Amino acid sequence: MSVIKIKNLHVEVEGKEILKGLDLEINDHEIHALMGPNGNGKSTLLQAIMGNPKYKVTEGQVLFNGEDLLEKPVDERSKAGVFLAMQYPQEVSGVTNSDFLRACLNAKSEEKVSLFKFIKEINKNIEKLEMKEDLAHRYLNEGFSGGEKKRNEILQMRMLKPSFAMLDEIDSGLDVDAINVVGKAINDMYAEDDSLSLLVVSHYERFYSIIKPTHAHVLINGKIVKSGDSDLAIKVDTEGYDWLYEELNISPQMSNTEPKKVQSLGACAHNTGLK
Image (tube, helix red, strand yellow):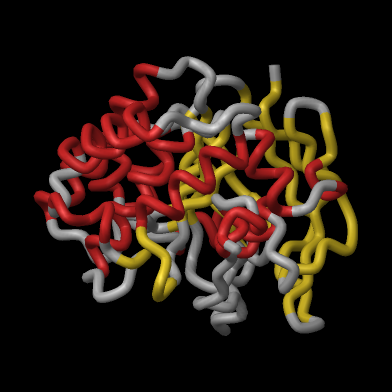
């Protein structure tokens, strides 16, 4: 069964069309690698799926378990099981990690999560991600290093247990040891949950060698132009994109058209939970 089915998706940002008729289908318990040169629409796709209002969908559908996500507000997409680990996590002063995550969990559950169960779960995941013990009491991403912010995104994913998670360059800014820790935490969650599907954006085959995608796609000029298995990710890493431009007789889009630092807290929280 398809978890996500994207049909003829067109997306504009500040009046400029970035995605130009993108099609993609992700089935149960698959890991899809999404590659492509900077500025060609990878982050735009993830933000549009999550519902960032700065990314305007002008045409197409995004079906999640048969329902059109585009008809749902951000918090409803999160409640349905969609999660976005952001490339540039936002700092939120005055809101602790524990308060943020518990508000998220309570928003998704019909009954409030018990404090004992919550503390046990967050401590277990903090240990798995080799994060500082005081993380639960620190303000959300405030004063965090780039690597700590990325680990914190995976902490949120492990706590919220989505059925479809999107990882936007979660490996950038991590050293080799941190990449291994984060990769193992993702792999363990994927192995434990046979309902979890992943859409992973990364420029590095090293990360894909840990996550091991079942499918790979190359996005150029707003469309997916090549799909394959993990061998495609290896080929792109070793040979770049010139061979693909030549094979498909397409021109590279040199300008960096894709906005880089647009974030949405709605990606993983019910908005009213933070009041």
